[in-house]
Length: 262
Image (cartoon, rainbow, N blue to C red; front, side, top):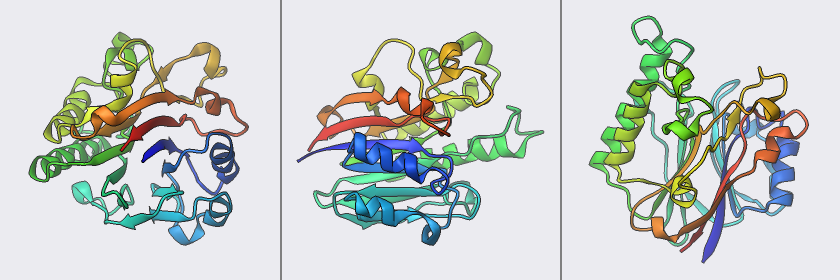
């Protein structure tokens, strides 16, 4: 059965519940994975999503920070969460569909502002998190699996507005790109978005600091959809809903979509 999946760093699900409901009404993905929910699960506005037909939820929450949720029109089974780097933070949750497909929803640490773990603890935590992802997927090779989320790294030169200017900026430094690549390689994950859209600048995040984010277009592709190699060929119709970045009081991220014929 084909289904469409979307991933979106919502930057507070309570503050932007109306935007989530708009996405569900207008775009109608079968499954929506949210990151940076900034809410305990019992405070998430799930009733409104259920009223739109999204009554299946698997989530992990945290007051004020982090938080990940999978809301779905399709039945879900909670298959746990992983605490990479031992941070004790709500940054991962996994759910299984009735056909056996497992969806991993990740929110990788941003890593702070200075790309040097000697002076920036958060950057070291990000690298450690990615290393633990690598080790986990090397030891538990995924099959019939989809990995989505805000991975907080734009790996390719055309995933950022200026490769040269961002080489020393957190999210595009060579060491981060290498760590993400190692995690991807360990699980033999296929970058579905770039398999569908192999060429050209492609962004899912634009800073709030830009006076006119759309005109400046200084974006980065921080949000990703990956698939295990056994189902990667079933993915198609990838797109980024750039327009959502211009909605009223938006997240600084835009939703990323893919459809799977499974």
